[in-house]
Picture 1 (cartoon, each protein chain N blue to C red):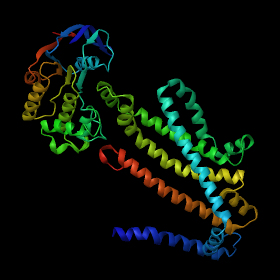
Picture 2 (picture 1 turned 90 degrees about the vertical axis):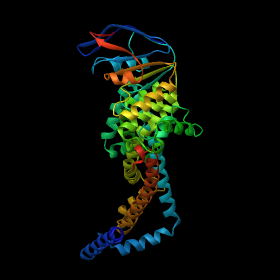
Picture 3 (picture 1 turned 45 degrees about the vertical axis):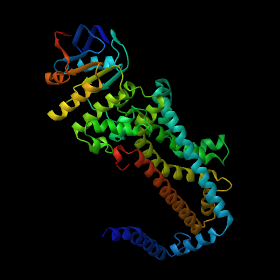
Picture 4 (picture 1 turned 60 degrees about the vertical axis):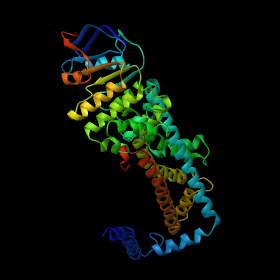
Length: 192
Length: 255
């Protein structure tokens, strides 16, 4: 469950969120739709606990796919997934299994600089799914992915995250449709 | 072609400069002013069979390496403390900045009044190397990508895992660069301190006495010892640093 109560957010002089309240029930999937700079990423950061905003309540553990892929450049793709699984040799096969689920078998031993933008994105999503938890935050998760990859990942997310809470930030309605989300649109400092 | 180039660099270039040295020695025609390479090599051979030679070389080596290791450890610890506690940074930054810009001779003469001459070269090495390591490690810690720290926080990394998986790989290139710079600095400042303080058994004392008694051939021979020691240590440590660098390189790139 996620509850946001009367959130206010400004970027310098410009106030982007005013009295913004919303509730995402346990197991619900919600998409925050809006243009760039309307505060979607900041809201996700606040829910993840990496940005302090008064009025944010989250029930359970959070997993997050950042807007940037945020992979550790000195770890291979498999190690980047393994690092959230326990970071031991015993859990490495499990990390490789996760990569195989998205067709990234050939990328397991490659470093992020050797991966394409789309491959990095997929590794970041798989890392978040592998970590587990109660709430999955996705910030424009399918950016840079082709249609087939988007559908494959959406199906995987749907299957792995079934029955758990999901909050998506996007400006692309197609992402919200693929993930079967209730859409809240940005309007006048709020998501309605 | 590559092999030929290497052979040229390793043999032909040094031989050229030895030949230049020999010609100059012949032109000067005074061993007191400029001994030839043959005479220096002969003297080096004579020195190498004495126990005093090895004792002096080994003790100087130990002094300088102990100072360098202490400086690297202390510099790293202080960098962590400064990056963690702003007050410590505010207090230590000007102090270490001042140490960095103070001439080594001033420290040597001052410390000569305060501490024993046997440990003084090691202390001088610490004073010269510590600010370099401290500044580099601080820069490394501060350049750690915030997004990676946020990732570690979201996925609830333990402090140990954050250190191992985020901070250490981020800081490693800066740390290794500091080690490379420090190596030459340690060796030069350590020997300079020995020459000015003349510890009982040391390369510095031998250099000083050679100059005192106008034994120019000895002066050249001991200088050659310093150069050879420096090259050997550099080779050994650089190989170790290179291995460490490759292990922590971004995406398997060379360090």
